[in-house]
Image 1 (cartoon, rainbow, N blue to C red):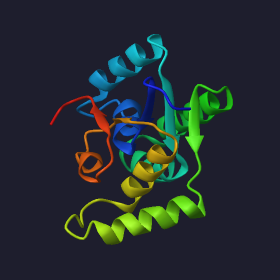
Image 2: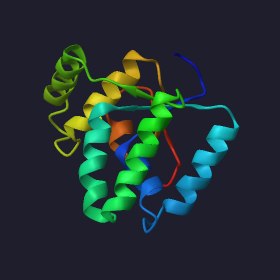
Image 3: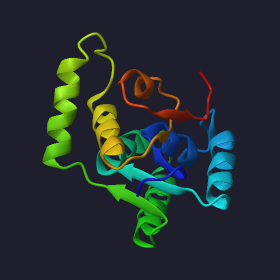
Length: 147
């Protein structure tokens, strides 16, 4: 799984892609196409999808939210998206990070689980607008660079 062309898609990336009225929809859609054309492998986690489902159904029309989520699940079934499961070991490591990062209380627990699963799978690139991934202490690169 280790490799330069692996990208972990955070909730922000999915939401920007799946919600046509999102400010970043056009840019993220173009970036997804480019990464796909360049042969990148897409990863996400079940925790990220949990967060996405909650947010997407608040922002998007019901049928469109269902369509978008089904497209992710179909892409996973065909191997175009890899959904990583947060194990009890990942959860424990994320909790250790939560305790360690006492000066960064705004980092969500989902982001901590994402960082842990990225680290354990040697994925160093994350599609997000969230600088929290850069504050965790792992060697991660954020795309797009919009900070």
